[in-house]
Length: 212
Image (cartoon, rainbow, N blue to C red):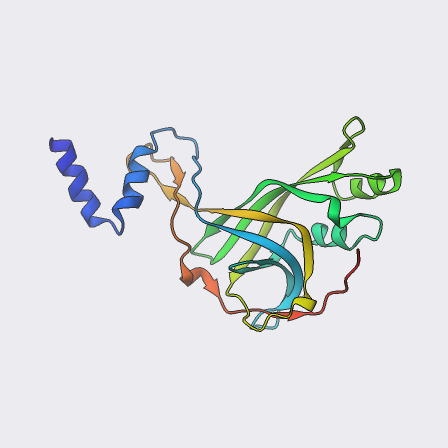
């Protein structure tokens, strides 16, 4: 009974009892634990400028846009390679982006699969870090160290400026939180609503050449 009252008092002092409940019931494992922090569906790639005039590649989502500051060059080169069939590139499961609200950016990773058609596109895809299985004709690669910022949707977004993905993919968001009831080194990932204070101004999209 005393424990329950103590928990209730602490909960009332936190910004959200729901988040507290998740943190308290996650366990005491000192290893990081993951929970879904929100999601979006990435439908296209584009080139864009931010309000400071910085140009970069953007994952275009249904709800937000994601300007990549690093880690995206290899993906872009692969998508623009004339030997590779873009319709054969699939994101395995969901991409994972971890939000850092203090720096107002995300970092993440995604696993790509590619089913090669001919020897030449198999050789081409291996140049981008893919490993291939001759028995299944499937190649795979883990793309890591993606870093970028989240932006509001541009209401005047021109679809002709987008390189549409044949297979849109889901991105799930996470945020590390300190577990105050576990070991000092323990952190957990809690599901919370995407805070708009980490979302910056819309981007100005630029024309991207299209191909197959």
